[in-house]
Image (cartoon, rainbow, N blue to C red; front, side, top):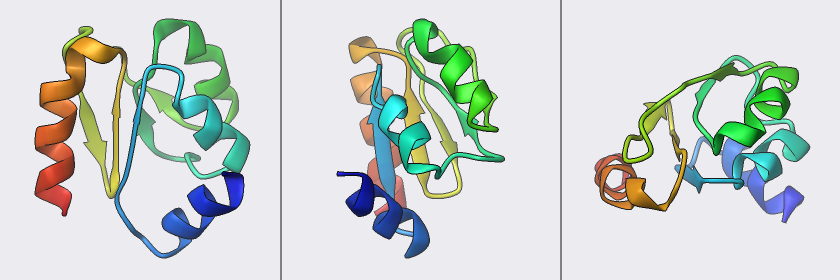
Length: 87
């Protein structure tokens, strides 16, 4: 999984991640310098990976470059709208 994430990031392909998913992005080392949302409990990991944690409402999403992130399942509509725009 880590290699797939790194491949997508290196190739500048769209990536979407929600809830605890950004933990995989931190492990892959692909969020440094990005604005990233995640479930609030993941905030320390996001910051330690060199990203800026975007504190959003649970139904919000954020796009930074080709990366779309959101804090929890209520954000599916917002996240999918932003992700489809990238595609």
